[in-house]
Length: 254
Image 1 (cartoon, rainbow, N blue to C red):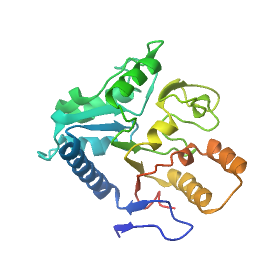
Image 2: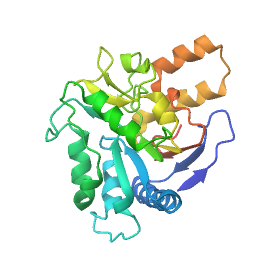
Image 3: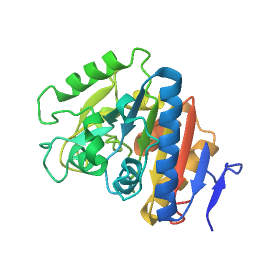
Image 4: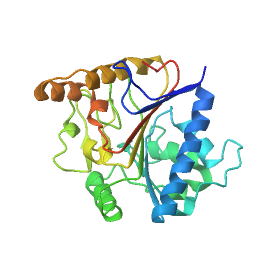
């Protein structure tokens, strides 16, 4: 049964939680993205949206773009800047590239993507410079994240080097816990400063890390213990001061 809940028990996630079957979830999230973009553009004239890769959000992007056969005239695309939350260090036409997936999913609107050459040696620094120039207040308008079965989000993997951000906005990431190939990723502080942070998770493999996140937020712990726990569960490092929302299917809901 589709349901929308605002968590009130310790077993539930922080923020607002929306649970719907997969097809309805994609349509609802696309509609909410369109509404949020319109709101931001009306208020500030342009919107900066950071999108994640992977298989889970691709149907959402297709619905948003109207490339699923749905006619959408409610997204002010000309005022939209789409940034990549993370990317694999592969050529843009590689089947593993998030940029390739986003371009295909957004179709005729792909020109709104702020692309990057992930194979360039200074790719992280270059993308960060572009972000800093575009965001004088250091805040994205909306970020859409996912979560992996290991608790990673963006390309922030458990106990990986990019968790030590050092004030950076974008970093390369690699190491034993990073699923190959090496990555580029927005850092946890930049993601947490966004005006809206939404998390999409589908499938039973996501239930474990989301339940662990709920427990971590509900159970008080010493700062050192909490920090260690968050390094093992990077989704816990995303702590927005503004809006946090989870979009889940029943299999993922803890």
